[in-house]
Length: 316
Image 1 (cartoon, rainbow, N blue to C red):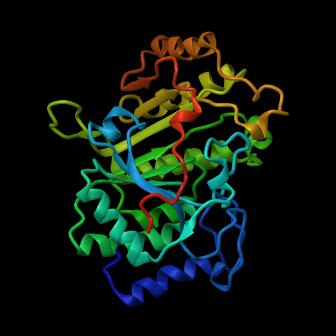
Image 2: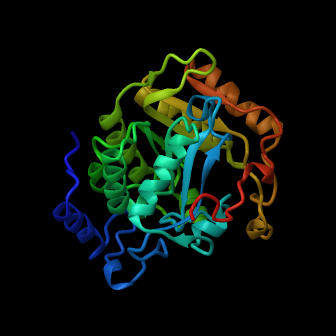
């Protein structure tokens, strides 16, 4: 049993986290209940841009039927090169009720989703807790995936303890200079390191299902790292940290799919794709470290076609 029984009093308690918001490391302190918005650009009104089966996650996440993704609007990190830039800025999306969100979870399960995948959920944690409780009370039985940029507040993550089965965070940067330049988050690595530790405490080592075609991850942590053009040294430091800290107790995905979108056309270094040589050096470093449980990508993944249209599918 989770620590948040489905009740109106627990809902009121959850809402209080918005009155002086500290849900992400920006710790803006704004009163989102009063309609104020912080760095994430969102008030306490839930807003999403798409809900659908998604086939472009790692095989153990999407399986053969797809991951039941819900893309939330707004973001507390907002990297300048973000592949979901429009929804990160909150420019795309539709307001939905918590009851509708719970229904969406159940609809995705009925469509055959391998799991419920919450994409960029950080700034809505209290509302998501309530919606998950409501959906569980109506029969939702799928694993829940928390898919985030890694810039998380451990205290906020503890609100999810017992509700999340799979943590799917990024670990984007090692050096503060890079995280400050690209995400205005000089403290990114220290915050992400603490967040990953809390995530691992909650879910532990990977547990897989017994599916005959593609075994699905049922519980555990899969850490993603997107290789950025010209930043292979930072990539190596991140891979070394993950291997040294967690060994084979987590899964790692080394991604080559960086796509230079129009908003970075003027930024030297980010206005090109990762070369095969750069990505090959990252893969070679994994091998040199003796890393196991690592997903790598084939050439051809750096395409805008892998970015879904944020057209409000599945929300109405």
